[in-house]
Picture: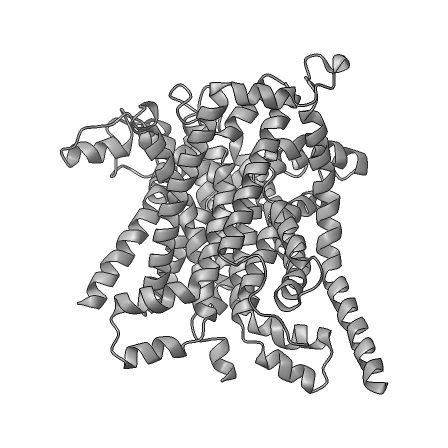
Length: 268
Length: 304
């Protein structure tokens, strides 16, 4: 009985999460007339025209590639510099460590409106406007606070005994960090990696201003299907649906450590 | 003597480690955020406008005084607070509950997890415009369902009664997965003994949830809530696309208010002062939250 109610709740929530996407998928198989039919249609003659148009469109492939480079770069680079900082903040108390942690957090608080124009000027002067690396640096900057604070939270939950034992065995700080602490925190790294990837993949404002014409990520590219007068529903929905495939693939790859009992259990 | 020498050696080693581990993140963040912050701060003390860039004057706190005097600012502040508090509250409850349910489930877990993450994975532009289509009073699927269920069709985004609710629905749809994902990660990294012990003692699921799951997950919930609040406080895209702050200014948040002045009226000084006020509010609230919940510092550190 308990299991039954739990499943009802879980599948209802799945329906709620999926319905808008179902509607988007639905729209992607409709003609432009069907897409705006009144009343809305659930059953109709599906067409592949939108998908064929999108697949033939080299620009959409370009959005995909740019997004992939930027999001993967942001995830790797972000974890690479965020995880060590998080570890130190979780394990060591030093002068000003609370203020330092809060300062990192505060970098996420500035409203984008205040950051965009200075960012643009800075990038223009440095000559990294419209480059992948430029956008990756910006996205790492935007998400580093989340990476550091969430990872710090994960390290706090990991018992310190194993690391302490490793020091007693004569390992250095660095060895203990990458041989013991990093493997132990894989569920955290996985969750934070997925979040960082998705945030970067879907970020719009900075991608628009800093990457615009050369590096055009998918949110910016897809916005092109939204005209002033008319929304190109077919192409918008078809390309958004297609772009979901690589994201799901990435999420699927990264979610493995989230499965219960895989981490701490193996040390006991 | 010798012990002292080793201590010094150890201290040096430790400090070197701390500095090296923090260095890359610090350099990047100083490089990226310090300059924009200083520019915004300086601009907020001037009447800088792109309409007449040559005649910028230093006007000290006038922008701030002006801001405090207008009703529009206070209305925007109220709208922002109502939106943030309601949306984040619903998202945290849903996120924690469904993460726990999913953690205890054993069939189709992978499928369910993927379905739950979809709202976070889809390009927001596409999702938001799909919601606009679904909310459409005459041809949207929402009113279609309302009619099927025998309920009164709503104007959703256009009506003063439902505009805010509609925005909260969309935000909740999009961002609950964020909380859920953090809680799933948290649940996966918690030790299993307390749960097993409670089960052996015959505790009910509800007791386990309130007495063990939530307290143990507490730091993760706190962090998820904090980040979600920081982001919700400066939400822009969905409000801009769905209501543009309307009807009237009933859903115009501080961020949209700043956008209006900065980008539409091009008065960057005034927009800068709104941004700084937003920053101050967030910093104060975050400090209080972190101190009250003892999350500012790790609860325990290495003994060496």
